[in-house]
Image: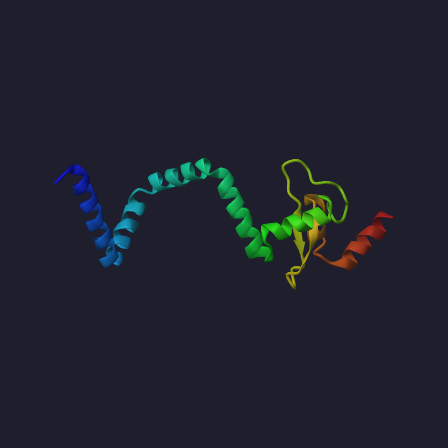
Length: 140
């Protein structure tokens, strides 16, 4: 039997073992990860840097979907409708900064895309229209 055939047979045997004993394999893997935490962390870090663009895209997609119920395409459509500008101050987004998704904290309804300053301002005023009008009156 050649070396290549031995390798193929060994891999098949390992695969069968893993299928027959998943709990043992999981327990052994957990022990190994605990014992080699630094190595695991370094591997994850290296993987992140190797695939940074893809990882960032996946995290953005997951964030938009889980927090706001939006797809990336829906976000981009909103962005186009607003001309790439904040819905409040109408300033274009800054370099390397995306417009934030503004939403009602009670209903979860998405209202539009805001720049960081406007989003923080509305948030600091507790999303309260009366408070916002009072602040505007104070400024006038």
